[in-house]
Image (cartoon, rainbow, N blue to C red; front, side, top):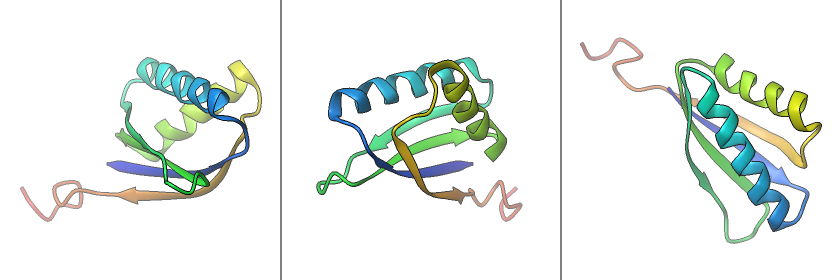
Length: 93
C-alpha cells in the first residue's frame, strides 16, 4: 500500500530536514514501513511524505514514535490518502 501523508510545515527548512531525517530513521526501525520519497511543492506550503507500508497502522506508529522521542513536530497534518495496487484489492492474481 502507498500512503500519501500531506502536511503543512510550520518551521524553517533546517528543522524540516531534521524532521524528515528523523521520520526516515524511525521508519527503518518499523517492520512493514518505508519512506519512499518526500515531495516539496514550489509554493513551500503543503508537503507530502510518500510511504510504502503494509497498513496504515505502521504510519501511525511512525508518528507516535516520533512524538514519544522528539515531542510535537511542526508538521500540521493536512490529509492522508491510501493508495492500493490492483493486486492488494484482489483485482489481479
